[in-house]
Image 1 (tube, rainbow, N blue to C red):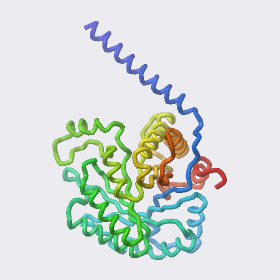
Image 2: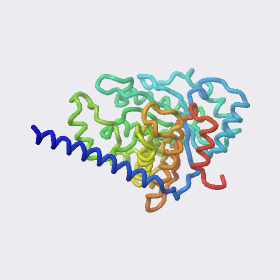
Image 3: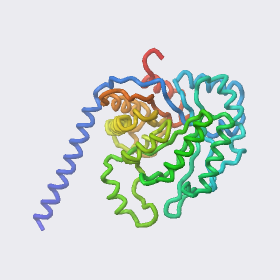
Image 4: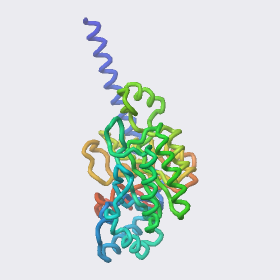
Length: 336
């Protein structure tokens, strides 16, 4: 028994020492100033009220100035959520024509995307099953109606998406064909990629053997490339790190930035999601840490991606003037 207690104590001490060593290493790494500056290609997730409610000319002008000042090139206007049958009642986006007209006047060159999403059915829970052929047809009809109104693209945020989800890939293919025929774009929001693809089968094996299981819905390298080959833009939801220190949160953003841009930066436009909300957990995460982490990730690349890239600000309804000032100071290229 004494030997067991001693052995347990040594294991605990070793684990604590390893954690402290990793923390110290992360802190030392975090002290270096990023060399890379940000870019002038950036996205913003915008609240539903822009398409669902009327606004004044002054509000549209102010929004246009905000987009120009912060070098926002793409705005994902929430136009859903999608109903379980794949439709979106037109009353939900009744203000879209006025919004799109105002953007052409006050924010020329900014692309307005209709942002559609819903909770996928998994193990009997959730709202929508996009693998159902009838549901997918109605989603496409909804897309066509929004593109015909004047939106520049369709942005999907269906969750969860597992790395064996062929239905989502098929929907992307069909949406791309539909959007391109109208001169539009298709984009997709995805969770952060796996830290190690080899762990996904382990999680799946340990999950309850029902439906898709409950293993983390993280895209593998192969699935991320499959999505990138079907989408004009991929936005990675890099936030919600739940890290206890700024160094570890910064490492999280840097790691995913480097990996995602290395994997798909030559295939599609990439936006790395950065938060302006106040997280419930992971108190070290904030906008400055995220932006610095993204820049450190760009530093680690052997060369810049061939396609445009930037950050996606989540979200316009949580971003205060002070946050925009931090964003400009920590991200936009000098002289902008």
